[in-house]
Structures are given as C-alpha cells and as structure tokens.
Amino acid sequence: MMWALAVICVGLILAFFVIPRLRLQRVLSRAFPSHHAKILRRYVPQYRYMPVDLQLQLKQRVKQFLFEKTFVGCNGLEITDEIRVCIAGRACLLLLNRDAQVFPKLTHILVYPDVFHAPRQQVQMGGVVTEVAHSLSGESWSDGRVILAWQEVMRSSVDDGRAHDVVIHEFAHQLDSEDGSTDGAPSLPSRRAYRDWAKVFSAEYDRLCQALEQGYQTLIDPYGASNPAEFFAVCSESYFYQADLLAHYHPELFQQLYNYYCVDPRDWK
Ligand SMILES: [Zn+2]
View 1 (cartoon, rainbow, N blue to C red):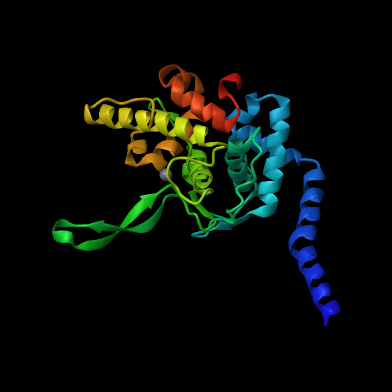
View 2: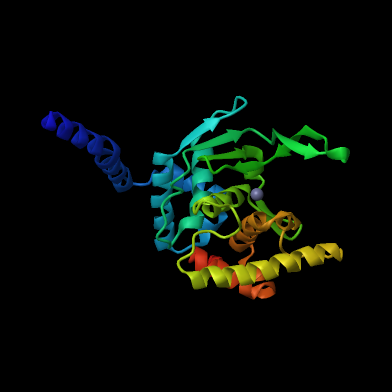
C-alpha cells in the first residue's frame, strides 16, 4: 500500500513538475527561428534598437511564452506565427531585465480579427440595469485569458502625440493582477516601494483628471483617467513608446516605471 502511494507521488511530481521543466529547458536551448526574428523586427519596433543582450533575453522570453501559452483564433481568424510572435514579443518587453515569471496566471490568448463586442451592464435613469454591447480592442482577465483584436494590435503606434499599443496595455493589466488585485500597482519589492509608487501615481492620476476637467490634453491617454488600473496600463504604453517625453514631462512617473520595468527605452535609438 505504502509502495503504491509512493509510486503515485513520484508519478505526480514527474508529470507536473519535472517533465514540464525538462521540456521547457529543451525549448529554451533551441536556436531562435530566423523567421521569428524577422517577425520581431517587423512588429516590435523596440526590438530593432535594443542592445544584443536584451534582444537575446527577449528571444528567450518569447520562446517560453510560445511554449506555455495557447493561442485561440476567434471569429474564423487563423492563428499564424506572425500573430503569435508579434503578441509574445510585445508582451515580453514588459519582462526584460526582471526576475519575473512569464505571466504565470495566463494560459490563453484569444485573438479576434478586428474589434470585438462584449456585453457590459449599464445603469440607466431610475436605476434600471441594461446590457449594452461594447466594441473592444483588448481585454485582460485575471482567470488566465487575454483577448486581443489583431487589426488593433497591428495599428499600435504613436498617434495624435500619444502611444497606443493594445498588447502592452493588456499585459500591463496582467502584471497588475498578479498580486491578486488589479488596482494600478503591480507586485513591488518592499513597503517603501509601494508607498513611493502610491504617492507618485496618485498625484499623477489626479493631475490627469484635473487637466481633462480643465479641457487640457496631456501626454497620458485620457482613458487613463478611468481608474488607477487603466492609468498604469496607459502609462506603460507611453513608457515603451515615448520614454523621452515621459521623462521630460512626468519625471517622477518615469522614475517609478523605470524602477519597475528595469529597462530604459530612451536608449533604444
Ligand atoms: Zn485597460
């Protein structure tokens, strides 16, 4: 009886821990496919200008991401290497130089051809709740899913003076939710780090809300004024696309993001 129990325990350890780890090591030891590198150069603009050591880090992260996560095409979209590597490359930008796992709670990335519609409850006059279909370019869920619209992924750029990258946005939400609450503060190393983060982010959030009330636009996407979680996500987009301007106009915010992301995109020129 005891022997049978021991055999079952060993079998479970092998099946859930040892074998997956060995398979991952084998994947990571393989060369990065040259056509995947071409996709990174085409779809991840930061990759082209970062130093070789960061490019190598990104490739390793992308290999792990592609090995561990499942992509699902929705509404007839066929998942291609282009879609997989583009999304993995942009998402893994957020992990460079950090002792971070590769989005440990995430299992599936659902990709629609274009904007998708999701039901949202709206409270009408008199307290009546109705369900309305919202058009979305991306969604992040704490149950292990990210949903993206491929056309919106490809439209990512700096437009109207502001950065838009739905992949960075939704994966910043994933980082934010890793500590159990999506509240605009990802996992930080110490109480002091949380205190500094809260002080700077709440002041900058208020600054954005006040600017919008007074009719001004700032570098930060107005959508960030929705709540602190959206504020962190849009600031992450700015950080990876407009680091120079962010450092100039919002130096304390830039410093907090630099402390967290551990890379300085100003160097990628
Ligand atoms: Zn968002």
